[in-house]
Length: 338
Image (cartoon, rainbow, N blue to C red; front, side, top):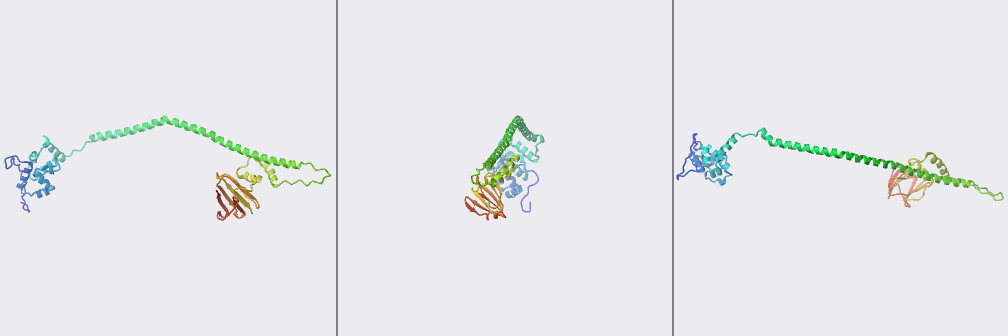
């Protein structure tokens, strides 16, 4: 007897009775219920010992297997209940319905495996995993070989095509400086021709025969204008030095023909300098203005204008006075004409 008054089964194994009250064979549930009642255990107490809900034990004793998760669970619960009640588990399991002839033998195998789990051997694990790794390695090697073969086949063709493109580009690059040199030579020739015509005019004027003595003395020959003097001085420089570089020829061009009208007109009251670039960033005007000079310029817009010593120059844009105060920084103003 326990302190709660329940009767504890003895340590001896109890053999399940073979017949019921009506003389028929007992079922597994009836055998377990009679053993529990003989042991004096309440259904809830046995459920607490086995750590299962009482409803599961009640369904097992009533042979109501549909209320249980499955026959594997039924066999496991019946085996555990038999051990707690000191019954022969094999006899109780033999009373359970069998789905196949070897159900009892399968239960023993399951119990044995549960007590002694069999770990997979190294060879078995290698059977699938090793073959899988080997197949992946072979696939990677095949891809590498394929890429190498493609590179070997097509790389010479790509190299030859690149060489041909480079060879085609070199003559084109060589032709570009020749065209620039030709255009520069044409510009110098035009300047020389203009200077030569001016000199011819001056020579013809000086060689005009004097009038007869009876006629009034003719007026003295006019002196060469500053522009003609500048042209005569510029001609030897052009012939000796060839085409001037960069902005060195811009003042000479301004002396040769200095327009006083255009999109932008500069009027100098003192020494100042101006620079005008067209839309292609090519210089249209870059020179120093002296007091009294007036220069105009036009070109592809927008025109980028830079004026130095803004206090000494007045600017007109399309005939309208243009203030530089809002564009100057220090004594330099920068603005665009669009």
